[in-house]
Length: 147
Length: 128
Image 1 (tube, helix red, strand yellow):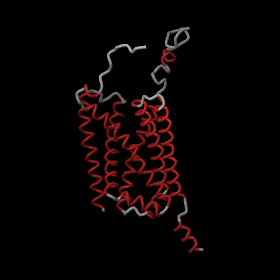
Image 2 (cartoon, helix red, strand yellow):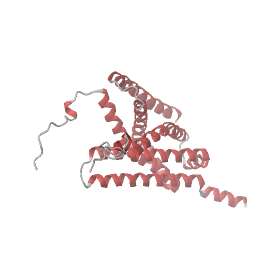
Image 3 (cartoon, chains in turn orange, green):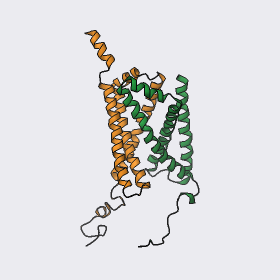
Image 4 (cartoon, one colour):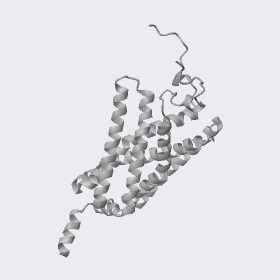
């Protein structure tokens, strides 16, 4: 039987080369890392600047609630969380692939990093949604007064 | 089966310390530090969504000496990882891949990320 990389009449150069790297795949991972890296630049600058502004006001909870009640702020924060936690999962995956060579530890840690990143994303994204959409006790009190 | 005695690739301590290495190691280190630091961001958001008591507890930590040190380190890691990441994006286009370019880029990355970090904390302390 001829090998995958051998030239035959029916194979182009691409078909011979595909999947032959040590990991058999990689473009999707690389593209994800680079696209989120690009997206992270404006998003991280926005987050850092927003936190500095919040800290400047004393960052009491009412101010944080009012901040995320603004759709622009909630949307930017959700975009930031999507981009940054995906970037983090991909980055930590490479670090584990490079340095952990234990046959049990490596797959275990690779799975844990994915689950951990997903957990952090869900926890933070849900919190932003609750701050943006949820009724706060003070709002309900205000509505009751108006009624 | 005994391993064949082939020459092995020399490890870190054999090489002369270079700018390339410094940037590469610090890029990874800052990435890992930011992954740990993201816990504080998640804590902030979850605490704010949970209510006043949980949020006051977070605020107490964030404004403590250790909390401020964490935040300072976090912003430093953010700016370094961002500047170094921009270098990686430029290198992906095939530019700046020579050793002199790395030396120059490294100098710019250190100056810019330190300046941004100190400038930011100057702003924070000035407006407080």
